[in-house]
Image (cartoon, rainbow, N blue to C red; front, side, top):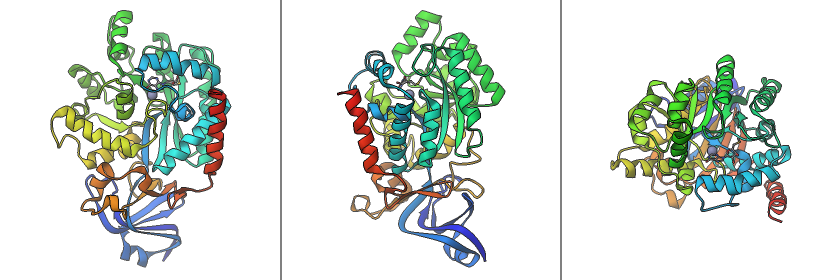
Length: 437
Ligand SMILES: CSC[C@H]1O[C@@H](n2cnc3c(O)ncnc32)[C@H](O)[C@@H]1O
Ligand SMILES: [Zn+2]
């Protein structure tokens, strides 16, 4: 019998790959942080002796969720400026607050708080875009969470950096210092077409090609963004980005709310990914992304929460439900996006966009053991005919009972391990008193 680190037996396992499969009474064998095997429980018992054993009698085990777009540290700005459209929200509220308060400590503390919220909700990996990305990376590592850290660029100075060259040089140094961290990966993260010049994009593209990183960019979020681009550059943002050479499989276009048919074709032809953030798009009244049309063209779509100042939750179960419901409403077809497709978006599609498809996103031997157990023995989830249906339409993040990142348990019985929740609330209160004394 082979001795292994961990054996997880679950009532249901949804590996996500192969698509549409639900395994009953199977086990996941974990060793050295990786998935060694997925097999029937009786076979697992005869082949493996585990140092640690978890029995999930009434649970469904899924891959850890991948949050494809966030600004984690903005958890400290949650609820600061509600009920506003994007431009007014950013220019008159968020950017002034960031100019006054964002520091390395703000980003570390805010990201720590966000990681706690995300882990408790079954998210094991997040794709971040924010100032002081080194502090975000360190907070993710301190939380034992996987993160794709955005090396940001904007054309305005901040407390973090002065201009495009400075942003990129600082980002590269942050990456160089953390290259050996197995839980970290990196993206180039130019903020948006309206805050990055052609020269800034050219620099981003050169770097992304040299060091083979994805490019994480807000794109076509509002109608106003598009109108202003036409006035300023004579073309819509996607066309400008195309001319600059940024449309490629490396691009993670965030939002894509306003897309014409030929622009959807362009994204498909170039193999771009899209980060769909339905709550943020609804709250800022930006619109609803044409998801069923994007799906029909085979575009890789992951789900994001965006920051907590525009959502105001970092809750991918809510984004899953919303994504499914909005796609149905928008297309007029009840089968527009089914529960399996939505779970795929929240896991493997996000991993693929980040270039992490070989490492995470499905319960597959050889991949990292990033796993999420959801307890279905709650009256609000009874009866349960189909666990994947429940994951999209009925489950809330409060039903997450256990979470592992690279085989290490981070949440047990719905509670964070090695994390002081009371301390985090106190930390948030300290910032609240600073920001709104
Ligand atoms: C350069 S750091 C990231 C920058 O993005 C801002 N931001 C947060 N949410 C959004 C959004 O929905 N659209 C555009 N920009 C957003 C954040 O406040 C930071 O300044
Ligand atoms: Zn955003």
